Every structure is written in structure tokens, then in C-alpha cells.
Length: 297
Image 1: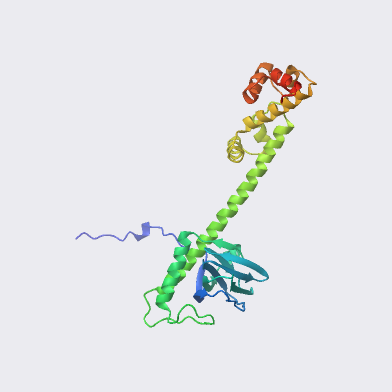
Image 2: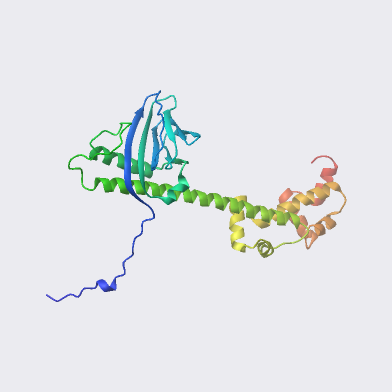
């Protein structure tokens, strides 16, 4: 058999660094509360995730009272007083206490988190592993220690750890995506408002897209995409709309004739102005002026 040389030196491994990690699990509970349940409250130096699995629950986070609906979760930060009580109904909740290298978690603390089907599946997996692996049931309120059964399933704690880390990662990703979308929408609205202000201030001109882009400091292609997305029309069409609306106002005032209005609105020819006016209003500028004068419009 031919001697095969070791080729390891030709490979370049990718080193993996954890963005967050959980190394301590303090509690995993699944409670079915009565209508009158009211926990006295507590605070501790680790994170606590509360998930409402059925109906709703009233929770306290520091001094803030929150109604937690079915399918939603909430993160209590370390050192914060919190409690839970039923909201005049039977309620099922999952509660998990944990800690580790979790600096990023401050982004989603004290916030209602709506779980996706995938995130709920991760939570369900944690509960399944916990029920199979711990010696005591998961509904003991004053339980202070998790005790493993004799001969638990292989790597059960690692599965719980990985599932919880994945759940937290997905929640953080979703939060970041939502924040970016809000920021993008806010930025886009600001850009659109800038464009509209420029158009309104220059109805006597014949601005081009490069003119507008230069004044705002964005590329023409970016401006076109943003404006179309948020205004449902193009910049030039909106510019024309503003000019025609101004023309209608000037015609109704009867201070200027059609040719003068065309010039006031930056049109190079009265013929083109009349064509655009008819396209938008369905009658000529002169007919519009007469119609307004007769009190029909």
C-alpha cells in the first residue's frame, strides 16, 4: 500500500469564539397556576426567563407591572425584584434561571418577547430534557437546587445549555433586526421629508434627480429606491404632482394666465405644461380656470 503523507499543514482551521455562553442553570420550572396564585416575589443575582404557555400572567419587574400574554416571554435581569400572579385565569408558565457570559442580554431585558415556533420548540426541548434528567418534578416553587437522576441520558445538561443559548441568540438576533428596521424606517422617513421639502421649495425650478441627490448627500439610485418604497411613487411624479397642485391654486386665483403660470412653475414650454396638467386633471388649464370661475370645482 502506498504511503500517504499527512496533509494537515495545508488546512487552515476557523477558530470559534462564543458570542455568549451559559454555564449555570439555577432553576427550570413548569407551573400550572390556579386563578388565585400570587407569588410573594424575590430577587437574585442571575437571569430569569418567564414564558407564558397558556392564557396570561401578571408580572412585576422592579416597579413595572406587565401583562404577559400566551406565547410571550420576559427576561428579569439579575438583582431586580420580580414576582408573578395569575390574571384571573388558570395559567401555565415556564421559568428558567441561568447565568454565564451574557453581556448582550441587556438589550432584551425587561422587554416583552414574542416567541416564534422555532423558539418555542427550543423551550419545549429544554423542558423535555429537564423532565427526563432531574430527580424532582418541575413544579416545586421553593426548589433551590436541581438534582440529576441516577444515570441521566448522555449529554442532557449540554442539550439544555445549547438549547437555551440558541433561544437567547435567536431572541437577540430578532431584537437587532427589529431595531435596524425601525432605524431604517426612521431614516427613510427623514430622507423622504427632506426630498419633499426641497421639491416644495423649488416649484419654480426644473430640478433633476442628480440635483436633489447632491443637496441631500445620497446617490440617485438610493434616493429612488427609498422614496418609491415609502411614498409609493417616484420623485419626479411627486414633483409633477406638487407643481400641478400649485398650478390649480394659481389658476383659481386668476392673477396669472396659463403662459405665466407655466413659466412660474419652471416649465420650458407652455405646451408641455398643458399636457402634464391634462394628464393629471383630465382637462386643460384654461378649462380648469373657467370651471373654477363658474363655481363647479
